[in-house]
Length: 323
Image 1 (cartoon, rainbow, N blue to C red):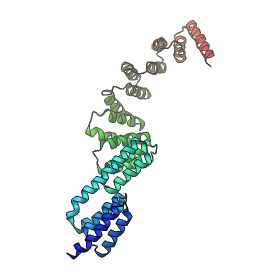
Image 2: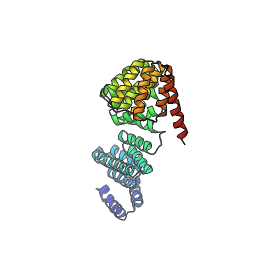
Image 3: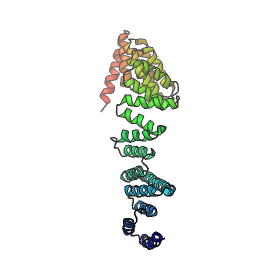
Image 4: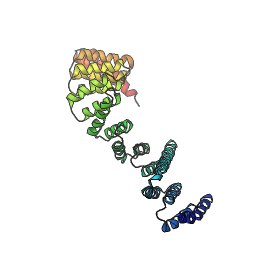
């Protein structure tokens, strides 16, 4: 009863200071009380709550931990408070991201980590903030920290896959792509980065299989174009032409893909087919100098010197018109 009767005036003073908005004074009153009654769990909890109102998160944690160690009956209240302040910081950080206030969003997510350091979400949000702000340096560390805490966070893994690929760390990107494909073998984006990474690290056999898996599911003409370029570099010319034709069929660039096909015919000295593809390009763009040059090469190689000369004159006329 002595503790209660002595404590009552203290809480009246604390309540009055809080109502006046004088939180440092409220803290000083509680700390003076705790110097006399260090085992008062309620006082430690109240101190933690006031620290939270001042965004003093390490001090809040210390007060809550001391409270919990003294009386576990406060554990539920402490969990509720921490959850509330963690969520509050996450929401404030998301609002700051929408407003493109990167310093504020970073601060909020860092505070959320201080409150509940085992949660994965704020680490991933820190990575997204850094990417949005153009600060790529810490991104991999943030994402790895998120995945250490939650290996099922596919968004964090996907961001790490893309980020490491863009940083030319193709082995790391491949590892993340394969982890995503373990969860969903039909993940087209993971299939894409798997194929592109294997292509970059010069594993042609695995890259060919990965590209085939990709183009069997992807509707993007760019993937067919990348496969065609890979096949061309490998000397698989008939397959490269097929891939470029598939890219055309899926809506790919009509000139770029025909030019890729023409390059195959030029490399293999298939001049009749080269002339045909050059004519297809000229049907799309009659003044395309590259197409005219390819046609001229084919005409000369086939012995059509008069036509080749006419084509040459047209090329020179077009070049003279170019500013």
